[in-house]
Length: 147
Image 1: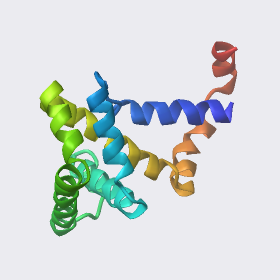
Image 2: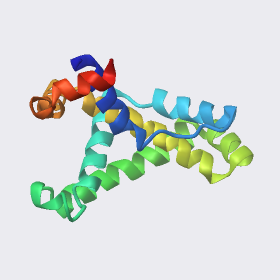
Image 3: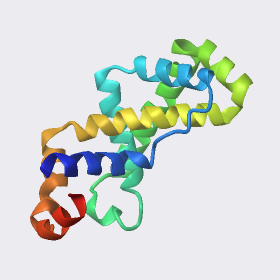
Image 4: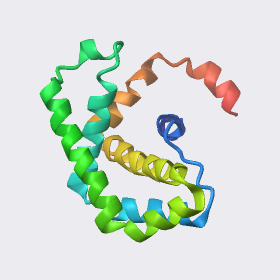
């Protein structure tokens, strides 16, 4: 049961960022972008996502992030996008835009966001925190539905 819940949770968390890859050029751009990221960049990207989300009025009371933190992270992200699109993947970017417009870039960066979320989700402390709700589940009711 625990493995099923972890799979369900992972799918739910990632579902918001799943792209609709409509053609080969968008898939190639997505692949180039994600292949061009190193581990440190994935972590920094995950941090950028966290800082962006932490500015929401419902979440901000729980975050100690400052505007300086956000600005530094935005600087990193702006530089990363520039490098990825102009140095690492310029041909794939051009082809995807020519075939599908800027939606191809948007969809491809959704994949990049998914990779960053996987980076966060792979951390043991995050997995433990996400799994903590399990103690409040009604296992009997869930088992009836899942059998």
